[in-house]
Amino acid sequence: MQRRIARAAGIVIALLAMLGPQTAGAAMRSPNGAAAAAGSTSNPCGTSTSPPPQTYQHVIWVWMEDNPLSKVIGNSAAPYITSLAKECGYAKGWLDDVINGASNYVPGVAGANCDDETIHAVAPKGDTCITQGLSPAAKCTASSCKNTVAITSIFEQLQDGPGGSWKAYEESMPSNCDASNSSSKTAPYYVRHNPAPYLSDLRIAGQHQGNTCATNDVTVPTTSCNGTSCTPAETANPFYNDLYGGALPTFSFFTPNACNNSHNKCTPYTNRVTNADQWLAAWLPIITGSPAYQSGNTAVFIMWDEGTFGSPLPNIVVAPTVVPGTIIPAATTMNNIAALGTTEAMLGLGDIGCATGKQGDGSQCPAGSTTDLRNLFNI
Image (tube, rainbow, N blue to C red; front, side, top):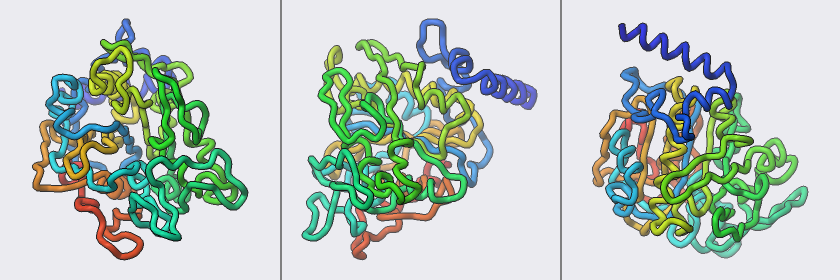
C-alpha cells in the first residue's frame, strides 16, 4: 500500500513539473494565495527513511539577519520559525564567532574575507579585506575591481567544475549584481548582504568564465508583507521559476531584503522578527513543495548572519532525511563556515578557506568551522 501511495505521489510531482512553473506553483497553493500544505510542506523533514544522498543535486541557503538564537527560536514573535525548527532540526551551539564588526557573508561563502585567505575585521597593512562599510566598485576594469577580494568561493568552485552551477537570488535588488544600497523604507537592498559583488573573480571579464555576477546574481521581486502574512510575487520571479521550471542551480543563495530578513523594523511591523517569520512562512513551503525538494536530493540551510558575537545564532536545517525534533546540544559548536564545508561535501567539492581548518597564514580558524553537519543532522 505504501509503495502504491509513493508511486502515485511521484506521478503527481512529475506531472506538475511537466505543466510548467506557473501551473505547478498554482497547484501547490491554496485559492487565497497562501502557501498550501501540499507535498509534505507542512512538515518537510522526516519524509524519507532512506540514507541521505551521497551527493546532493541542490543545496539552498537562506540568510537572515541580526538576531541571537534566544530572540528567534522559542520567541512568540516567531511561531513559524519555532515550529519549523522543531519539525526539522537546529543546533544550540551554532556560534556567531566568525568575524566581529564586519559582514559575515563573504566568509560564509569563501571561508575568508581577505586576499591572503584570512579573516580580519580590520584589514592588515598591505592586504585587502571586506570590512564594515566597504562597498564594491560599481564597475570593474579588464584587470581590477576596487573593494573586492580575489579569493575562491563556492561560486567559483561550482562554475569552474564539471556540471556545477550557482545563483544568488537577491530580493529587491535594483538590478543584477548591483553594488549599491537602496534607500527604500519598504524594500531596502544592502549590497553587504550579497557576497557575489565582492568577489573579483566573478566581476572581471576573462576570469572564471567572465563577469558571471552579472548573469548569476539576480534580482527577485519584493515579497508583499502586510503585518499579518506575506505573499511572494510569482510572476517574473527567477527563484520561483527555477524551483518549478526544472532550472534550480546546484547551489542557491537566497537573501530577503532588509525588512524581510529582520535587519530593519519596517512598517507595519512592530517586531522585525515577526516580519522575517511571516516571510519565511510564505517562502519555505514553496521551496519544499517544489519538484526539486520532493525529489529527495535537495537540502535547505536557514542561517543568520550575526546576532551577539560569541553567542549562538538561530539556524534550521531542512531536508527529507532530517529526523524531526533534532536538537544538537550547545556543547557541540559550529558556525556558518561549518555550513560551507558541509555544503561542499554534499556537492562533491573540496574545502576552501577556514572550512579546511586553517587560515591562509596557518593560524587557527574560529571554533566550530570544521564541524561535520552531515552526521549531526542526518544529511
